[in-house]
Length: 534
Image (tube, rainbow, N blue to C red):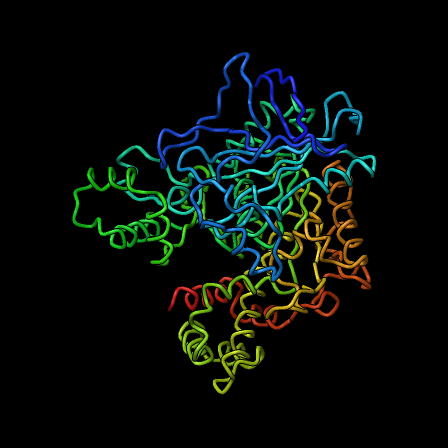
């Protein structure tokens, strides 16, 4: 391996990977330390005159082993990687990766340094890692150099599952805080403000992009009173997808977890001690098998309030980021709902009747009847057909309509840019020909280019060029406003700039019409109750 050594003014010597002529990689840099698996993150302090080995990825946080393979099942295509090199750590997984133009490959547009593009991965707060091959940032940085708009790219880890989101009154009494995963992300952003200048970046020009649960996180970080970034990109997700829950819901989740771990017979002090000391993979696997759903908690701090459609549409949501975030890109895939096929896959048998019974119990009779009719889910449907139709409704209420809510709720406070990603998944599998979840991300990052044709790779370069322009403070395309709702469609051979209406973006109007009668929050609540087994 060819290496490069950066003389960093606050960290020391940072030894990185210089295998590429134009992009240097500094991998696995620890940004925070932990006293134990549930403790709040403390920003990393570096000894004076020390050396940081940043030539390889650091350990992942506790998560599904070989989680990259799990993600590839969604994409229906895989990238090769060294599975034996994957490491996990309970307390040393808070690290990030930095991709920079090499010296001489790019000239900063100002003495302040290059704009920074920071990425938060998805995974339903249960899985994912910044080290996944699909999230490699070299090609985006290389494209930024070729476009004379060089950037620095960053990807970061944060705690997942129980270490990231388990919380209860017992944990509070033991001195712990909620929302560890979100606190980790915030600490990483503060680390960038403190140290990114030494890598050639401008700490005042950070764009935060998240995908899926990463987009949920990005929307929640907009609650910060302290400016954490300058611009935001939310891909296929928002806090309307996996929003913060009240204390009572978090407490119920904790009590369920305690029972699954057979700790319910202990006194609180011994229970906390066991939760801290038990094998991390056993903790992760037991809770995942038992259906533990890690969710942010309303805490009056990181998550000061709950989120609903109504408060966004009517502009009453108190979002501190309205005062400091300068602009926002958001959008979705034509069939993001494919991701919800994972938790629902085991319920495919008889799903038409189960869904009809649940929806009929949640909505007024007329609305329930219309929903089942308009989405084509009669009780006589085959399991396969009904499964797809249920996921289409899930797509519309969990991914599509939230983009309207956030756009309408924020467009008076900042420029908003909407995209609709419609390029079909080309690879064999159940979702071939549909634009499945995560497909927009890998096209943007160009990590699957070797499996795409020239038109598809050109589409990825166009998308990446738009994002690079946005990170550089430019308008990527025409703004979305209440008066003129314009979206950019990403699909080979399609018209790019269109009215953001179902008829012109390959979406369904059904959910919008249903919401006119019962409201978006009622529809989302009905689907959530079905999802959790109600």
